[in-house]
Image (cartoon, rainbow, N blue to C red; front, top):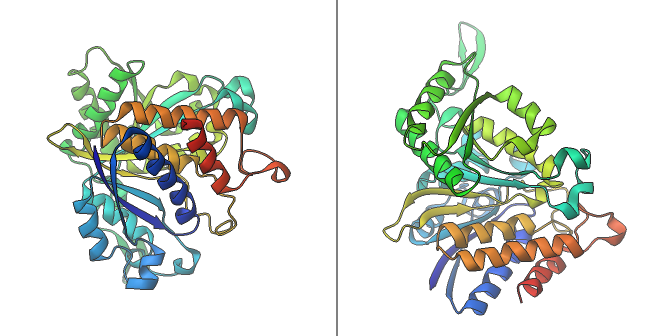
Length: 361
């Protein structure tokens, strides 16, 4: 199969972890006889420095031409004082919009070999295996009006939460379809006791549920969900969330997994005629500028994102499963980066990437 992939290393540790993800992708392509075509582009802070914009037109063109896009991380402290529309994160929001990827899939799994890595008690996290489906291109991150204003000598700020029926329906259907492939349980997250937009969200999700009578639907308020993720994470299978709630809850999921360096993600949109998803794939972690350049960043989330890419954008389930098994092998026997083991016994980013390739065979 021909795999045309755009690689956007981005900022901070992004290029380091992405390099290992590409190493694994190249290894898999050779192992299974696929033709791999890689393109490289700029996004985020590095794009601002070189092109004056967080999402250059050249990157947009390449993303539209690629079958899938692999992203490292976006963000740099040097741009923190810029207005929101000129910061690196604007590039991330922009490419999501360009690709039309409206559903972000974030698996959270507690591996038996890493139960001690979580700050929670082993019995609290053991058996956790859930996936968060986050709506990605609507909600408060995109709604208008927005901004900081002055009126009658008073300064104020506005952000607007907006969802259309169509936006909720399409992401809900992705979540229900995933639930059908898993344990057939879907939990929809909202704040319907306070927010009208959440009341609308709950009503639309309930309507979509009629199309999936084999899936059990429950609703939960976001504050209770945050608590239950710590108290009883095993109760969840598929979590469906609006944009901002999913952003927050998926980072909480890192506590269950033991490290945010383990959390991969897939952002998917329209289906191609082949049935494959248009996709943007990235680790959940940020750019981590404090450890950038030290060669100690955990690449497993980026590598896991490659597995998701092979599954969703190319339909290569065997190859994706091989990567996931290799990740589990490395988690069981090492090598481990410092976020998983004390620094005295820690491996480098490159060593972990090579170990995954070796485990694939």
